Length: 267
Image 1 (tube, rainbow, N blue to C red):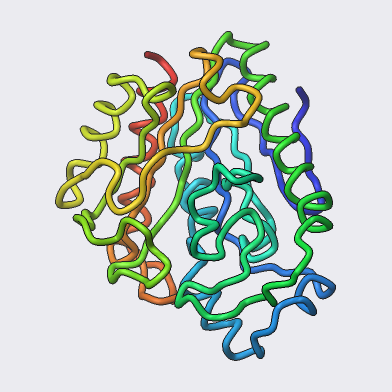
Image 2: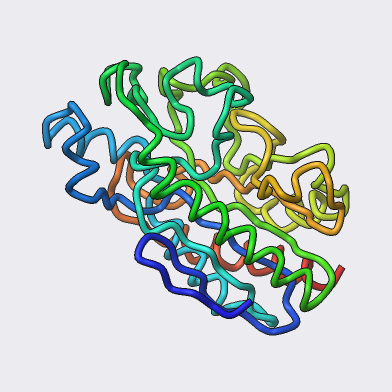
């Protein structure tokens, strides 16, 4: 698998012997004009929604992390907003977020207001954006399996300090670092690496307020050589909310994430 730059996503090369892929699915605010036309919000409301829904500066965090690692990880970065498609949703009825209008193509905002009409036909967006992204991420994992016999997906996210109305499981703890795990794909050792690496930020929690992690469907619950962990960073740790600049916390997070990546890459 050779590194690929695509109009809508970017796969940045790491060390040939690194199994780690830093996955950054929600960092962009970019929406193609033809997709924008299908969104009912005016520009001010759309910008406010992007402030809430975007995992701001997580691509910068992944880049800073890669620079710090002893063995450079690979990076797969979404270049479009999750308001185009959310590549981490199930594309079918398995997706629980459909209940709040946030399946692969969102029809509702973070405040449960209309984003697209209820009659909106999501299939063109799924075919144009979702399926190529999923195929490219699948290829990325296949490349690590072929090269080193395993793949470690570290899913890089952030979340707001205050619960937003769309959150289905937002009534639990909101620790500085939330670790999302999967019963099949997250080994205890990977979780322990993360808990040690991120201990300095005031506490870690597991699966609250967000749970699970991303694995391409070809490998999901099928291939134990593919391991994965989601890192959800509470935004006040590193940035001004909502949608503001990042501060010195980003550098400290990059140090911690690099510690996790190097540990995951050698264990």
